[in-house]
Length: 572
Ligand code: AMP
Ligand code: MG
Image (cartoon, rainbow, N blue to C red; front, side):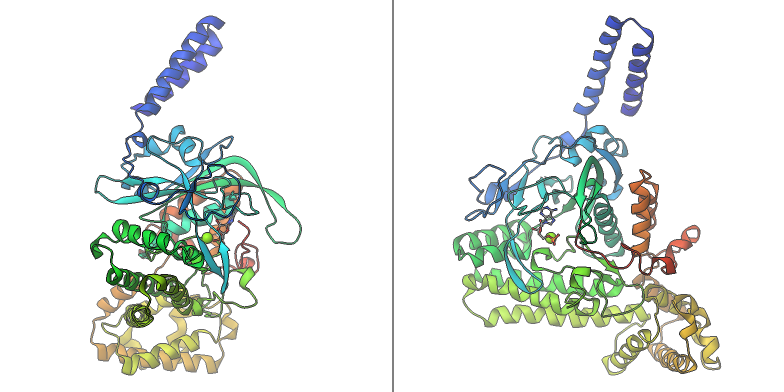
């Protein structure tokens, strides 16, 4: 109805300008503007209920200028997003919009694009940037903070849930250091799509409401080779119960500001973990234990789906156990635990796929250390960290049982079974996602008599270099398949059950690096349909989608070394 009103207003306005005398045309134009404004005033965005606890409960930086600086004694600085010239909506997530009762009509309105590009704030928004520090690549890096993220506020939705809204790429803040506070289209498409893809995969993650082109140009040296170029700028609106990171606590501990550290811990327990009860030293430990547990669960999921974050610095670790900050992340194509998508990490490979679980523990240890001044005992902190290791181990085993379609993980047999599988998968380039989906298709009743060649036939699509499948390799994979099916038989689950379980743990569709790049290439030409198509496919990553089979295919050879399809720099 409202869209029809706007449409009618636009038509009348156009006709008036074309057909009637100037004075009358002005009158009609004014009337049309009022009609359009009316529509804006009725917008559901204006009905959002804000309860901005982070700013009401925690101390604010007294300096209100947007000058880059060290901010001590405060948890955040008030800062407005920078206005941009021509906001244009590229895409939005219907599911996230529903959290706020925003209709399609609301999300496609000009008002929505203006608000989520940072040009306007709706009533109740109170923008600010957080102060945090972090360990980057194993070294303490001092104050970092929201250098290009601006929080708009926290909404309490109809279900009573708290959701913080945050713009990424909305201009400089006091924490921008030497950078510009902006984000380019390519990295914004990647963040937008991956947040939603991860959610639909069942991986704990921050969400994304919208992706808006700003109309501004942003200068980036994409390859760090001294050739900066102008790229289109964009803003993503991220949504999460909380954006607090390990680094928010670390910065206060590093400055010896124990009073504010305690205040932030109290705030976090009361607001984000109210189920734990009134804050006390005992509850601090319960809270840390819960952060360890949630982080372990997140790690199990990353390893299950083949996600590599790429920059697991402590400032990129959420105290909610959510995947946060999608930068030079990537998806394992051929199974390789040594792979990292981040060119900045290419030499040390600190954040390689196989190292992620250990790094999460290292990061949790930095969080535990920063809480030490509130606890003053080492042992209980170590006990909390041990919960990470136990939860991860147990969760990982259960997850592997799921990937293999077993009812239970039996360490006596299954540790060796999975170890051997991961050895064999590395012998020739094997697509991890395809391998597990294809493994589900094998028929356990036809294993015993089949030759190695026949056994491998249904798996052939998963191999990048089929010419490298030597007889020796086939014999080893054949032997593994036979021992796997022997184990399946002893497990006793029906074929149907095994397949169902496998297909619920092994996605068919993931945001392959080259698929994201194809969508980015199109978006850069002003064609956004690929972004929306991918968003749609990735809504049902475990389902067969026969007309979208091409998006489940392994990486084509042209993408092997192409920028954006294999490795990425931090330039974003
Ligand atoms: P990241 O490696 O993206 O997690 O960023 C590390 C730190 O650099 C964070 O404090 C970011 O806010 C900041 N940062 C990254 N890119 C920019 C940028 N373009 N402008 C300002 N700050 C940035
Ligand atoms: Mg970050």
